[in-house]
Amino acid sequence: MPKIESRPIQVFGLDFPHRIGLAAGFDKNAAYIDGLSNLGFAFIEIGAVTPLAQAGNPKQRLFRLKKDKALINRMGFNNKGLKNTILNLKKRKSKIIIGANIGKNTDTPNSQANNDYILLFRELHDYVDYFTVNVSCPNIKNLKELQDKDSLLVLLSELKRINSQKAAPKPILLKISPDLTLEQLDDTLAIIKETEIDGIVAVNTTSTRNGLSDDERITQIGAGGLSGLPLKDRATEIIRYISEKTNGELPIIGVGGIMTRQDAQEKIDAGATLLQVYTGLVYEGPSIVKKLNVKS
Image (cartoon, rainbow, N blue to C red; front, side, top):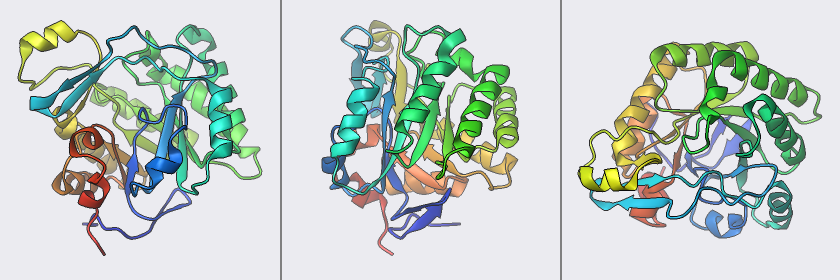
């Protein structure tokens, strides 16, 4: 099996210095790329970016579950919008690989959602290295309906068509929910094969509350997406399923519960090509990249 090592790797035509990146949600507005790049990440996924600025869901909306090394968030795609993100991307000095996680505005009805994704794709195309289509966040009302087979096929096909007309096409990835059934996963993989997009990000946060230690506090917190250690095994399970179904040919960015080098290695052994952390950075601190990478 491949090892977590601090050596270069080429994935979907991009040259990564190693496998460890920062997941979307941390730098929503591309405002901290230069500082974050100094922590040693191989790549940073910004966003989720929406066309218009939006405040997100009411506060309090981010909760730590320290005993479980987990977070629950219901941020709701809070960001300063497309124009602000582009301004920040233009100012950055670091040459680190940047992915753009794109989503629709909360007020945009699903019937018009594709317009939001297409606008973001067109406008950000010159400023980022790859795109992640986010239709799986549990904190946007009815967003998950866009994961339905017919809706997803239309959206990805159109993005692929636009991309093919570009002088330098950018990789397109899809971020999926850990709460998909096997049947839904199979449908998603069939769409990915048909549209020939470049990869998958597995997984987003979960709406489930399995294996948490404080039921009373969980009830008090209420809705939101759960990330961190409780998501680790489910994320690995989905990565393994995708890898086996695609004969290891579909690039997978594995994310969910990566806290230690062993956690990272489990994802690689399951079939992940690259890895992302978020909650791991919160609990393990800024040295997490060095902890996860074995020196080659």
